Structure formats: structure tokens, C-alpha cells
Length: 269
Image 1 (cartoon, one colour):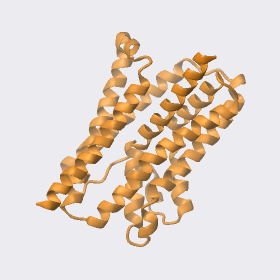
Image 2 (cartoon, one colour; image 1 turned 30 degrees about the vertical axis):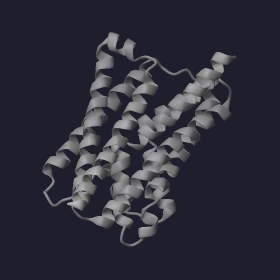
Image 3 (cartoon, helix red, strand yellow; image 1 turned 120 degrees about the vertical axis):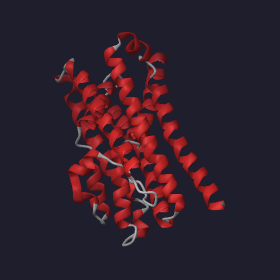
């Protein structure tokens, strides 16, 4: 019983960290950036909460999927190829996102603020140009209809069946949303602050964040490919998901602090 309680606590912490990590996804950053910039002039008060609204819509879909899958968990067996397909798709997306964001930094003019690049945002196009809270949340909900989010929601539901019923799946999905809400909410506030400045501070900070998003995307993709190609690396990484998740969150959070530190020095100078 003690072991089960300990496993459940570890799973709760891991799920929260995965939510924070998901909030740093390049597509999230790019879309929240676009929504915040679009509303900065017309509705500056609401623009600061675009990240929060986006996460609420996104998290609502995750919870709905987790509840649905948990209800069907006893009747459905996950195919063995499901995990492999998810890993391959994730690696391909990460390489594309990393390359696009690196290219955005290299192509940006010296006086141009670099905006994060996302793939889903390109497909959804003008949906980033909405100014009603409900519509911003809807954009977040639409972003949840992707393979990576669907697979994570299914993972919560299927894992929760080891500890109980749908209530456990709901708790995991809620924690995932709270982790995502934390990072996306802070991101929205930070972008709104940068837009208000629109000076050398914003130029430097945008480049630092775009480079970090690119580097993290390519690094995670490389590690994912190494796990697929090397059984020894895959075996070594087993059970270290929480450490990797925390490390990624710390790297991106550290880049925020670095950007703030650099911009303060510029402001003083």
C-alpha cells in the first residue's frame, strides 16, 4: 500500500512537470505571442491573460479526453506500435520547430523583434487574431486536438486505472493543466510587458528566447532519436522522466532569467 501511495505521488509530480514542459512548446509560445500582440493595442488589459485563457481551453480538452479514455480503458488495449509512432511524430515536429525558430533568429533584422515560430499556428492562421476571451480559449482547445496532446491525455487515463477510476484520471489531467497554466500564463504576461517596451530590451529578450526554444527542441529531438536507435540509452533513461522534465523546465526558465538580466543591463547602459 505504501509503495502504491509513493508511486501515485511520483506520478502527480511528474504530470505537473510535464504540464509545465508542454506549456513551453514552441507552438504554444508562438500562438500566445500572436494573440498577445494582436490584442495589445485594442485590449491591453485582456492581452496579458491570453496565455492563461489559451491554457484553460487547452486543458479542458485534455480533461475531457482523459475522462473519455478512462471510461473505455477496460475495453481498449493500446497497440504496441502506438508509442513508436508517437515518438517518431514528436521527433519530426521538434526538428521542424527547432529549425524554423533558428532560421527566424538568423533572418531577423537587427531592429526586428523575433517572434517564436509554431507549426499549428500556421495551419490555424487567422485564429490567432481573435479578441474575445472565449475565442482565445477556443484556440487553445483546438490546439489540443493533436497527436501529442491526445496521446498524453490517453496516458493519464490509462495510467490512472492502476490506482482507481475516472477520478484519478481527472486529477492527473487537472495537474497537467495547472502546470501548463503556470508556464503559459507567465509567458503571456511577459510578452505583454515586452510589447509595452518595444525597445532594445525587447529585441535582446526575443532573440534569447527564440534561440533557447530552438536549442531545446533540437536537443529533445536528438535525445528521442538516440533512445529509438540505442537500446542501452533507452534502458538508461527509464525511470528518469521526472529528472528530464525538471531539467527542461529549468533550462527554459533560466533563459527567461538570462533575458531579463541582459535587458536590465542594456536598460542601465
